[in-house]
Length: 67
Image (cartoon, rainbow, N blue to C red):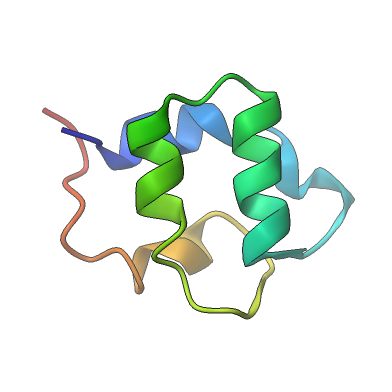
């Protein structure tokens, strides 16, 4: 099960240069070694830009904070 903690760890520092599109979020997580389950969850994000990590949560409400 993927948690918000897993996603946050996979995106640590990714938003430091500004907003990211869905594709950039997925690429950033992949570059940081995210596992396939995290990448699959991130692929559910809508095709828009995200200014910060918190912006993801409204689209991933079913993802628990932690285990």
